[in-house]
Image: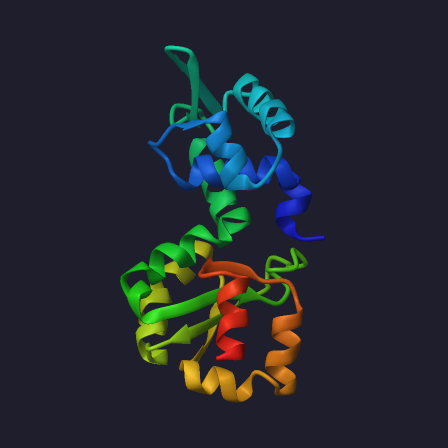
Length: 195
């Protein structure tokens, strides 16, 4: 069981990840359910508890209710830091790689972090496939490593290299395991392996 699961649980962690990963933005209940891929009922229960605890604000606009991270909470900075370093594993690398997005076919976290089996000392294993070099990826990830306070180990392949190694033991193991997608999805991985 990973740090994020112990600290927050699945639903709470997912909701906090969206709200504290997008400070200053407000979300409707249905938006949060869609983004977290969790049913409305559990998301609504978590939001009620988070509002009661003062970690989330609720604002009614017409017939809709908007939720956002409570920047006035006395523990805002600490919660944001914890969320970023645990359940925010998607958002930080995603933001870092955004300038290279057009050159990247797929990028995903694999290993213990993707399986939620990481410890505080676990590094982040990141697979990147596209028309981008290792040094460009590494350069973009420098700030992300500082924010997460974890080492990020990128494995970078061109599409041709990825296809050539897809049947090798390393990639076979990685592809069979759980993945946390940063750019692209499982369909892109399948397409890359078949082309």
